[in-house]
Image 1 (cartoon, one colour):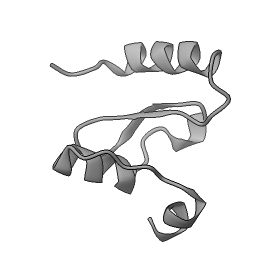
Image 2 (image 1 turned 45 degrees about the vertical axis):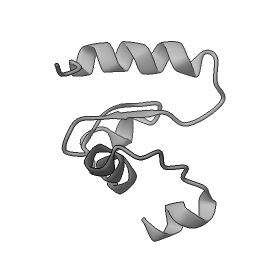
Image 3 (image 1 turned 180 degrees about the horizontal axis):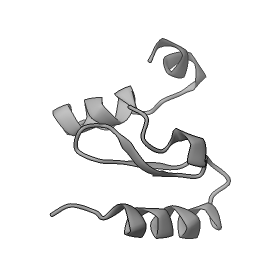
Image 4 (image 1 turned 135 degrees about the vertical axis):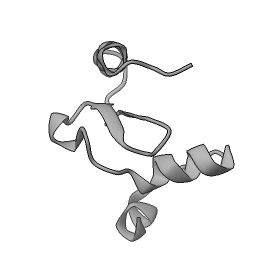
Length: 68
């Protein structure tokens, strides 16, 4: 089952009302389909792709963000 981009955008909008964090939703290829930063939609997210491939948790801090 896949998440439609329109629903992903609604989820991001709801979550950003509660969390003061940047939020993305990516598809199975690591492409961002919804984000609190609309200019990121359509771009590849290496961290999301890694999680999809490994099914492991990934915490991205500032240091890791620079290397991705």
